[in-house]
Image 1 (cartoon, one colour):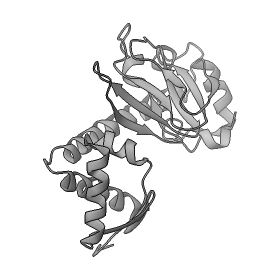
Image 2: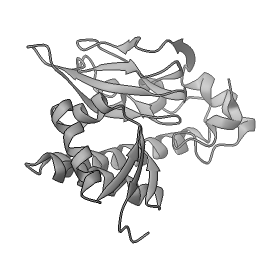
Image 3: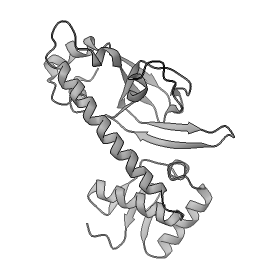
Image 4: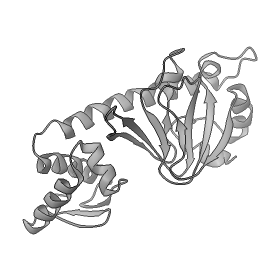
Amino acid sequence: MNYDFLTTTPLFEGIPVSRLAELLNCVGAREKRYQKGEVIFHAGDVTEVIGLVETGSVNVVVNFYWGDSNIFAHVGKGEIFGENYAALPKRELVCDVVAQEECEILFVNMDKLLTTCGDGCDFHHRLIHNLLRISAQKNLDLSTRMLHTAPKSIRERLLSYLSEMAIKAGACHFTIPFSRQQLADYLGVDRSAMSNELSKMQRDGLILYRKNNFTLRYCQK
């Protein structure tokens, strides 16, 4: 277990390496490795644990009754997933969590996390504080995605998403975490139509792109 890395993540921020082993034992932490495409949580599952991505990345995928699917969220290295369901006893997941690439996940028992231990672990309260801040940030991220999918046209949705990625990168040049199909799913549009629109946007001088690397033209950064 990479203690040095864990202390750099939002969940374990402010917790010294010297106390991390004790705290991880307190919250029943365990690790597991997954291959690309492997399902970590299935829709319909009930979970008591949250997952922290130590290596690789995962996608939260909603599967519809008629066979289509939609990427609801991308969870990168150092980020967590499943916390809302783990905090609500017997609440079934409505989505799959799927390894986008080979990854290693640290699982933490939510009940043990939210219940301070009898030994008076002084960094347990910090862990709860960190989880609250992460949940607040995720609510803001969800609101942002709703802004990306609110426009009616594919071009407007793409410009909204790409503008946000440029702002996050602090530069006009950036790399997005999605493949073409994953980006189409995230924005709720048809892949072919989106690819055509990207080509038109490049011809119109709005963007330059190659695979997952994008440049916004006339960017103020």
